[in-house]
Length: 54
Image 1 (cartoon, rainbow, N blue to C red):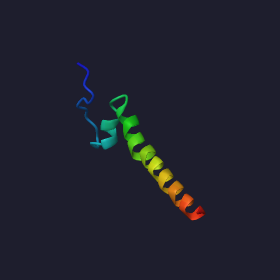
Image 2: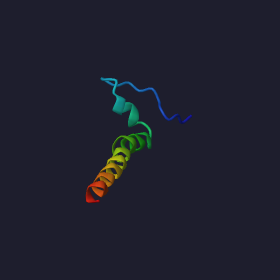
Image 3: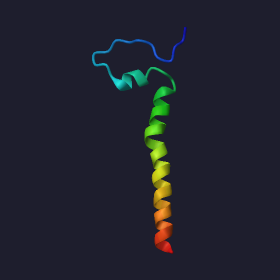
Image 4: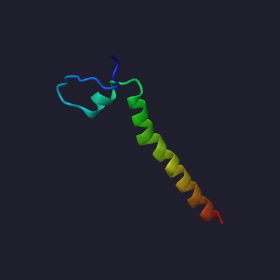
């Protein structure tokens, strides 16, 4: 039975240890935390520059 998360024993119960188990969990986490805010900042800065230009 393939579960997305399987119980595992670590010295320190780590959030990233849990994320690293699944093939896509770490990728989805990093895209959510880093890349989506980058799009948001890009749009925000673009709007600010266009406003300054006018």
